[in-house]
Each structure stands twice: as structure tokens, then as C-alpha cells.
Image 1 (cartoon, rainbow, N blue to C red):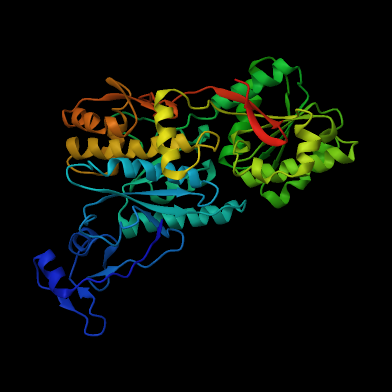
Image 2 (image 1 turned 180 degrees about the vertical axis):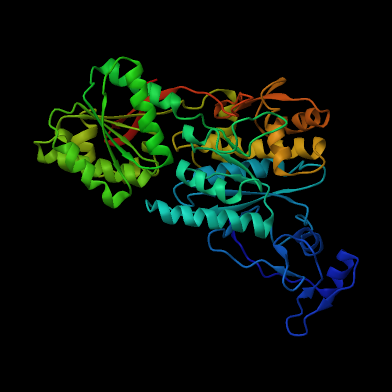
Length: 489
């Protein structure tokens, strides 16, 4: 992907013709100067990446921001003929390294809609990142800054992301009412009504997601614990929107199944603090199961490596208890590839690591996506987190833009959210590039469709704007000495 290069050559004469208005140039820079009152006028005149300086009343190029340093397509900011000021812009807001497959799949949707666009308007993506580490407060600050930058500097109408619930909550509060947010993987139930409690087509919320909330994960975890007979359970969870919510849901699910006072729960705030609850839980030698819940792949790796070391020493609960992880434990690139030999010897060889995640995608829609993704990027998307959900999220934003343009008087966030109320009833169509023209035509007629996502069923409830889905059990195994995931169903 091309770095976000903000300097471009625009002649005064050419810009004046484009604007159809009087234009002056700086004698020093020869950069065109045009009086303005809003960003749209500058983008129409000079292209993407131009804004109106409210202090000077002149158009100027946006300042570069290191958090949003790549774009798709690569010539998005350098070819104003292909991508003029009315280009429909979205932004990804994810972990720029750990979530690369999610970013790729969102860009793939943009690539697939390029040929037809929307009433001669192109689509483009600004790719923003909040980094790959466990410093949640820094990530939150960076995510808020990147979201604000994407909205103010480029006028993006939708954000694909963020990837975690804590970051999603902070970003929504930063840019609420200004942009549609479609997260592929922020699953905390606490986010369901962050954008309002009385939702409907006429009063839609602006926070959506393509992954179901965590209630299904908690239910599946509880069922597995009970069926395995291991009811002396200790829980270590990361304090925050995701970890605290899932811990509470798991406790309630176990209680509903007749397990009184089921969890010995210990929170931690950041990776550096993880050793404290592990010391405490490790000293409880009668613990049969240790559940670990975090929203960070690096935290899962830290936990498993430490657990393996403690297991090798013996005389503590990590030497005998089995371990259960949440969905952050499911990533070939960011978890399996980072585990050391001790984890293999102490925990995997004895079959002691398993976890629960949303159900794996399957079926014709996913196979078509997988083929397209592999052809574009040379690797399979099957076992790398929420890649399918990210592709679906980008297409939902595209659908929302289509509905809003045809039925709401222009492309704006509330109109796009209304469109997402029209993707769960009507003619059944898979999400892919071949159905776009038909879906666009149906929206133009004011009717709805029933889209089948690459990630699975996307039937959104009218009052919650949520999908539903059961959790799926998996186990980390050794296959010829190689760490792999085994789906248990």
C-alpha cells in the first residue's frame, strides 16, 4: 500500500478551471489558494486530502498523520481524475500489524466495488492503526486521534473497526453522530445500546458490528465447563469493556445452570500487572480450570508462556489445571506463531489448552471470499481472527452508502445506518462482488434484501441492531510438531 503522501502538484490554471472561480497562488509555493467556507468546496476543487482552514478561509492540504499512513487503492490521493472530491471514503481502524488480514479483507471489498462504484462515484479507504501492543490506554488515545483525523481530514463516512471493545467504546464516544462505525470484532454486550436504547429504522444507531455479542461465547464456555465436570474454576480477566463484560456473563451463565458461586475471579489492568493474579491463582492447588479472558493477542501469548513456566515448576494450579481461552486466543499469526517450546511441551502435548470463539465461517459465500482473498494476498484467511467479518463490515458500509444515496438525499451516517435496517429481509443474496449491481438496484427501488454474510448469518434484530451466534469450541494441538487449531464444534 502506498504511504499517505500529501504533497501534490496542482497548477493554478488547472485548479481555476476545475473550480470555475477566481483563484490566486502563493508567490512562494505556487500552491493554489482558494477562499472557502467548508471542506467539500476544497475537495471538489483540488481533490481528496484538501480541507478548508477556518482561520485563513483558504483551502489547504491536510497535515500528515503517522497513524493513517496508507490508503487503498494506492493512487487514491495521487490521481484526482480517478478519485475526485466526491469519492466515497471509509477508514479502517485496526491493529496495523496484528490485524493485517482484517485490513486486507476490507480493502478487498473496496477493490471489488471499484468497477461499478455508485452512480459514477468511486470508493476509497484510508487505513489507520492504533498499534500492536498491550498498552490499552495508549491504543485508546491513538485510536481516538486516528478516528478524529480520518473524519476531519478526509470526511470518511464509515469506520471499519475498531477491533476491541474498549477501543470501540472510546472511539464511538469521540466521533459519535459524525460517522457510521461497523466493527468486525468488538463483541462486548455493553456496546449493544451505546448508541441508544430505542432503535428503529427511523431512529438508527451508528454503532454496528458483524460479529455477534459475547453472550453466545459465555454460554458455550459455561456448557463446556459443566460437561467436563470441572466446576472449581478460577478466572483471570482483563478489566475493561470486553473482559469485565464476558466475566460477568460467564458467571451468570454458570449460575443459571445451577453452579453456586462458580468463579474465583481476579482482574488485571495491563500486561505488566498480569503476574499478580497468576501468583494468587497459582497458589490455589485445588483449582481444576483456569479461564483467561483478554482482548489482546499479546496478552494471551504472555499468559500461556508464563503458565507453561509455572507448570514446569510444579506445585501450583498451573501444573494440573486445564486452561480455557476466549476468542483472542484464536490467531495463527499472532498467537500460535509466538508460542515457545515450553508451551508445546507443558500445555499442548497434554491437551490442556482449549477455547471458545464465534462459529467458523463456512459455505459458498465464504469459499468465494476465501478464493478471492487467496488470489489477492497469497494466503488463506481461514484461521486468522475476524477476516471474514471485516470483509462483511466493509460491504455493509458500501450497502449503507447505496441506500443513503438513493433514499435519504445523499450519503450521510444516519442514512447509511437506515440502510443497514434493510439488509435482513427481502431477496436472499450472498455478500460478494457479483451481487452488488442487483442489491444497488433493489435499494434504488426502495426495497430491502436479505444478505448472507461471508462470516455467517447477518440477520439484524430491529430493536438491538445485533446478530446472534453460538460459540464454537477449539483446542490447540500438535500436528507433526506444528501447532494447529482443532475445531471441536
